[in-house]
Length: 113
Image 1 (tube, helix red, strand yellow):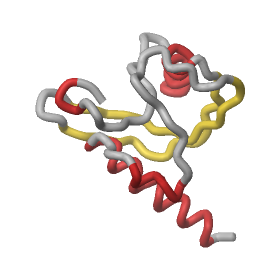
Image 2 (cartoon, rainbow, N blue to C red):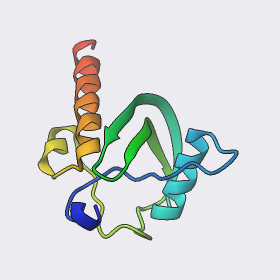
Image 3 (cartoon, rainbow, N blue to C red):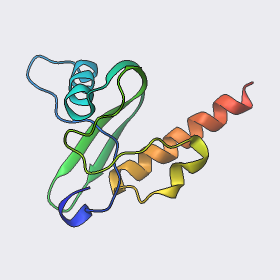
């Protein structure tokens, strides 16, 4: 996080540039921020959240690392979390909703096996 949210955690990503699809933007942002190539999978959810100074709308996708080692180019810190440890960090408010959705989907996947 940054500003008043410094110390909070969020998923990597960023803004969509003109002419890009959300998936193309995500691939570009991950390469720019983490020097990592990803494959973008299915949409998890579109999160809408009102912060005090702006409204955030973010499409959130399942992704798979194709190539790269998480080289931090812009973020202060990063970490891989297993599904059992998703609640171990202080997520930014908009990301809390996403964590809940991921937890539900992982639970459903486990139950369907």
